[in-house]
Image (cartoon, rainbow, N blue to C red; front, top):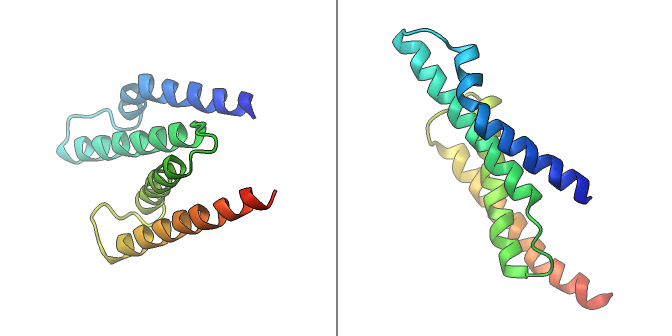
Amino acid sequence: MKGVKITLIILAITLFVSNYYICDYFYYNDEVKNIKDWWYLKCDIYGVIIALLLFALDIGEKKWLKFVVEIGLGLAISNILDRLIFNTRVFNTSDIYMILITVAFATYNLINGNKQRTVK
């Protein structure tokens, strides 16, 4: 598992260093529309970087820190899904549902994760 976390961190660092070149590869032109798309791709790459780093974070048995990281990871993943799959770049009601689902799952893991540790 440690090798996977190191790989995720290396991938996140590589994306951070090369995101400018990735955006230029796809949108290298001086038109206004391409500049807007260039910036959207850069924001998407930053969302992937944040999700990778939060996923690779090792927090151990700290339940409240785990709760906060799960909310952050859920928001980062829902942001990526919202932008790439649903092609939505503005805040709308589906984002409220994603936030509520993320908080519900994190709360469920906080409550039941504590019970599972005491049973063992």
